Length: 323
Image 1 (tube, one colour):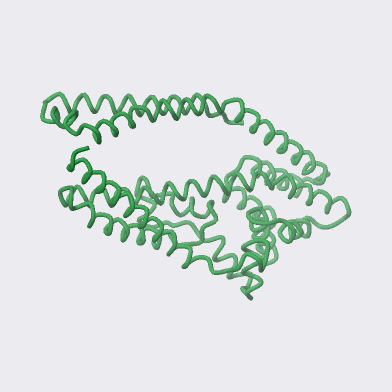
Image 2: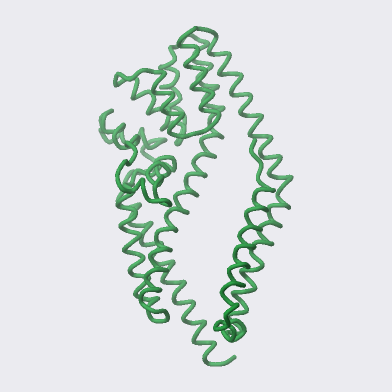
């Protein structure tokens, strides 16, 4: 192995370590600024805040913050960041998150400027530092939504049993908030706090459906709104909904298991071109670098990138099913 190749590999490892360090720094600062409660004090975030003496108004203001309507909503990629952070259960301000990411991007750019021109180095660093939080927030949102959907049938069963023994609907919702863990306990606790604070029950449940944007929760909100206006056996409706949601969860898991081979093939086929280009550039820098000045290089590479991205999108569409 040539000394130049060894130096290049060391540089790549240094940059990977710097990027990982910046990411850990940003996430660590975010956790320090947004979460200080002990998990053993209560079973969900709402109960933790109430246990620390927070009032109902403070709980609603923090856990149900209003949507950002400023300049951030006009940015194409970051316009929905505030809404996605709420769905992910993050109470940190989007402006603070972007500030930490920009500081991390500047730190990354100071290291990248050693091998790239200054403008390109900082452009790449800022781009990575802005796209990375979007990906992290999206992953946390999907994880929280999956947890909420998994807990929803048990919450509905608890509500149904409360209604059958004669408890009011708001009391049954309060029992779910007290007995169930986060995230469903926190969300139902917000409904209970809103109603206790003077809000209409139907409006609070519909706002919950809009906040989490889950199809099953929209059905629940519609059922409560109909029962509130016309009457009916709400306990029976909620019990049937719990059974339907359990059936859909079981079907999703079965389909996911059946399609696992196709999803793995899609990831493998999408990663092959990127892996080939990366390893070829590392092992033989002159393989692509020797023809980079050719007039056809940019058009051909553009066509290849478009085809690779199209292939990845088509394969993802083929192996993802909506149930």
